[in-house]
Every structure is written in C-alpha cells, then in structure tokens.
Length: 340
Image (tube, rainbow, N blue to C red; front, side, top):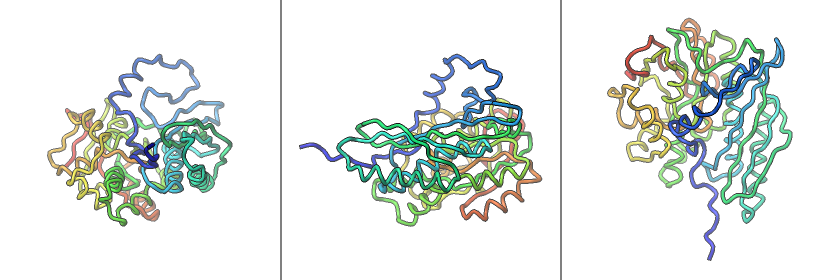
C-alpha cells in the first residue's frame, strides 16, 4: 500500500542549504566582469542589480521552498511574500513575477490551485503583475517566485554598506522557525502559530517604504540564515555589532518552545557556521536559538543613521508587528557580534 503524500513535512527557509556549504561552492565560481552589474553574488546580497541607464537599474531575485504550514492558501501567501522580500530589501519597486512550482502528479490539483491563489493575491497586494511561470512534477510540493523590480542605480540598499555608529532596526519579530517546528509536532498554541503566520504573510513593502524616507545605509531581510548570520553578512570584515538582547523582538512563546528543543537543523547549521564569531554568554539557551533561528519571510534588518532611528521606528510600529532598535554598528573588534 502506498503511503499518502504529506503536504507539510517542514519547509520554508529552513530548507535552505547551510551558509557554510553554500559559501564553499559560491567562492569557487568565476566572478562576473560587467561594469553594469552593480550587485552580484559576491557580497551574499538579497538580489542582483543590473544598471540599464543612468536613471534605471533592474533588480532580480528568486526564492522557493517546501510548505511550512498545512494550509495551501496560506503557504502560497507566505512563499510569495518571502520571494518579494528580496526586492524590498534592496529598496526597489516590484514590477513582475513568475511562478515556480514543483507538485506531485498524484496530489489533488485543487491544492495547487489554492497555493497559486494565495501567491497571486500577495503579488496583487504588492502592486506588481504575475506574468506566467514554470512547473515540474516532483515528489514533494515546492512553490515560490522569480521576481523583477526596478530602482535608481544611486538608491540601492546594499547589504554591506553600514556606517560606523549606525543603529540596527529589525522590523519583524523572530522565532517563526521554532514555532513552525513546534506546530508541525502539534506542540504550538493556536495563538503562537497565528502570530507567526501574520508575520510571515506581511509584505516587507511597507517597511521598505518607511526605510526609504530616512538615511538608510544598508538593508537585508532576515531569512534562512537567521538574524545573526544575516547581520554578519552586513558587517563583513569592516565592522562589528553590539546587540541588546532585551531589545530584540520575538514571538514570546518561541522561547518556551526553544527550551523544549523544538528547534531546527537549519538553526544548528547557522550556529555551527558563525558561533565562534559571536559572544553569546549574556544569552539564555532559548535566546541564542531565537537569534540563530531561520526565519521564513522575516523582517528587514536596517542599518540607519542614528539620528533617524527613533523616527523610523515610530513609523514602523504603526505597521502592527513587533519591531525594535536592536543594537548598533561598532568598530571592528575581536568577534563579529557581541550580545549584551
């Protein structure tokens, strides 16, 4: 007797290859040599930026993954919001999207219809156009988007352009990877899962539009590599950061679930990759796990002029999700990140 196809086995951005494995492959690839390529893969940025003229550049990205929730419609929304996020992390405007679909031939096509409906509604909310896509038969469900946006070449938010003394602002709460893991094992409360879904389905469009009003120097979105690895990519070899653990927004129940070891393999890959470069002695085990936790459709991490941080945060709070000024960029020290 054949085993039934399981829709949600655990996915989202926890399905990413670990940062160590990915880096070992990418560093062996030849570097592109085109003066119009403003941002490629060398800086681990969120999207590629290619200059077409002095006034216009295109921004390209793609993202897809397996389901992390049981509802196909909500999964479609989350996957689309996550893929669109890279455009907003660059400070760009979204224009067009293409569906990426892997789907078992034996599964009910109505499920696929719900996934695509959820994705298309997020594309519509974002103000862009869904123009087609590509599908293949696969053993497991996977869905996402290939996305194109536009931006002025001089207004790109690179992920590694921090300034000394910048404040670091996080626009969504952490902990969704832990909560989705607990939910899959029937241990998460309805309240915690609803809060995680509300965060994951919220477009970063609105936070990006706020960031553009201020002196934002660098930006990235927090996804599968977790808060700490994405922060380390922002800092590069030039800076360190001081993070105030009590200022970091997270979904409250994720701490209790982390203490019960509802944690992900992806989170441990993040810890193994970066752990020696982070001072975590001030953190509880649960808080460490939250900071390494892979986020699906996570918030923006913004490096902003310190005199603008409070005003930007006040606007971000009107979006209705937990957010905060979580730390600051410092001179380069022995370790990359100090949590205090």
